[in-house]
Length: 176
Image (cartoon, rainbow, N blue to C red; front, top):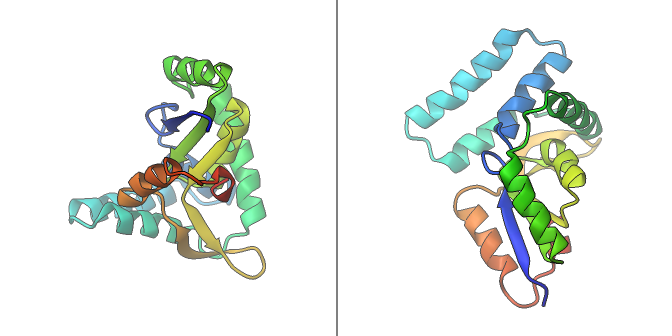
């Protein structure tokens, strides 16, 4: 069995919290004024301040995408990454260097995050990661986000995903 190297994304590989950086970009791209992002962020911070579990706050975040077209959101993700990366301070270079050493040694490289594909797919592609384990919002008929979270990868669910990957018979493709 091939060895695997796991990398968290936000604050480990990237200098930004991808979910919030992308939310700000996405709202602006859809024509919302800047205060829409600040209100959404304040609401989510308020949940945390009231002691709402992280998993529930994460679900509240994904409800912000309810009704949005998944393909359009993916396109916004690619544009967000291009713009963010272009500023030159997107990645933490020491961690990227470690990632590249693991990849060069032939290890399976796994990105794991509570964020979601519009933010993470461009990062996965840029780095050439083998597997992406991330939260997956539910997509309904018409390729629109339902506002529900089909696969959470935060807190205990993130730990469980890493644990599952270490068991014999794990197929990384089920996450990618």
